[in-house]
Length: 362
Image (cartoon, rainbow, N blue to C red; front, side):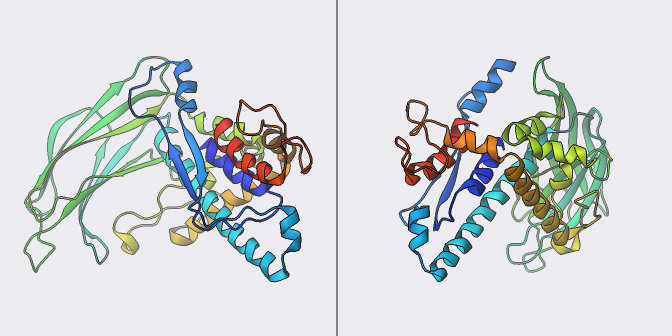
């Protein structure tokens, strides 16, 4: 999240707009082994997390000198492409921060879990089948009676983690099976059920954990035997600390406004039922919902990034342009705006902007 945020800020620090057609962002992280549950291990994990940008041979690297030679129409063309690219990076950083926020930022515990069964449709909106709300408490394997003859079997168990872990523990929900479901595909006389799992805190604007089960094709008696781990954080400040390291004013401004970073990081605003489902509010200051609310929240995130780029500009540029060219092994420094500095032509400056912000300072 911090690396993607730095990448979004680095885009704003580029001296001229770029035309990067087909450029991609690669997210990499270590999954080969379980990390130790120690404070020291956190840095090791972060050092093995990478955000890299690359292109497929269709992108150009624009410089102030080259940009000044372009016609007005060509300059507008670069500005349009750069705006779209920057919007995509903003959205990617927002989605990553949103996912972290609603998965790993709840330190107060969960109140309820809603289990909603849907019939999967590939061409139209998924059909709502059943819904059951359960309390978050240790529960042995239990069979819930739904409507009609339908039943749903699940279990829920708390697992505490060792002291010093970033997580206090987690609730393990085991979705076992459902039986005697309704027919929603009249042509085939069957259904394609799956389950949406939503954990909530009871607060209107609080964290909202959401995951989906697999789809069980053509059956009225699906057996899942799937596990969902719903985490409870040891502290709720990990995300804010990471974003503050990327740009201090991102968090400070929200606190000065008497708000929370959650205002710009809403939960998913619709569930699997599509337009027929309930929409979820996205901000405290403006009670909005649905697609309009989601757009409003993303706009606020972009506004906060713009403000951070302005307020933290000097610090940001020092991190970007004072980084060694070519990585940590280089010795030359890039001087802000000076293409004649040692090794500091604008091509290197722009490339290093993004590399150093997204990788070296992750």
